[in-house]
Image (cartoon, rainbow, N blue to C red):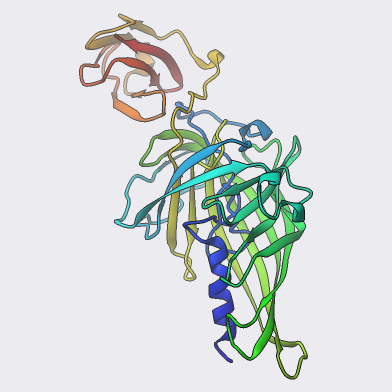
Length: 379
């Protein structure tokens, strides 16, 4: 049937099921895997309350068994694009469409999954529905994926083992880091789901991936503001499909096609999934925007990054006063809560700058003026 390749591709797109997992690249974004739709977004992400701080990712910033990470996915994003590359960028991705869904990703042991014995090189798995799983290996050198398993076509379990593995991160990851990788997906599935006269279908994807950390800066999502690295992933792939009819029982090539996909992810210190990820439709326009809503993320600032801004009183009531140098007049200030949400912002207008805190609930905050920071407590 001439519709067979399209039907197969649509079915394999379910492998990237948005209610289940997503194979996108970093961020996991197994978009490297099957850009027909994107996959789980796994790179790491956590809040850093600063704006202008470069960060470095290592294995401690990756997911661990026992993690549960809530995310939201805007499946018809109104965002115009991924924004600029280079140092000290600012991305504001707070606009959403009416098509936002909630996802929750659980990180589980390989042994707890039904087909973990097929993925002997993995040391963790991830699932959104406790039925289909992506498999990963975390080490000091890299974060890789070994494949996925699940009833992808409604015709029985399919174990898709990548050979070779797909590299999601090489550590340490910093601004300017880049690497090339390749992966192959090669699976045989029952053909009856496509055509009752077809015994089996073979799907093979061969891909070359280029990964580059092309920017650093601050991203604002509907959930908060974070210091991040941005990762740009380009996946040049070739898909081949063969069919084995019931009669005659001889394999024949049905179709071969090649394409290139692009995806972007924003990753931060200490946090499981990516802060955000953007994938694109077949015309290259933004299609899906995901962001993490992990609660209780700690502030990603080292104590050495806090300078002695003169703030009083601290603890404070309804207002604080900040003493600054004359050179700081005209700089922006912002107050963040412990989750990285920007609570207040403004511009320094005088060497003795008052800031009203009366609309904020009691708790701990961080004040930023330019590249200087100070912890605050409102009593």
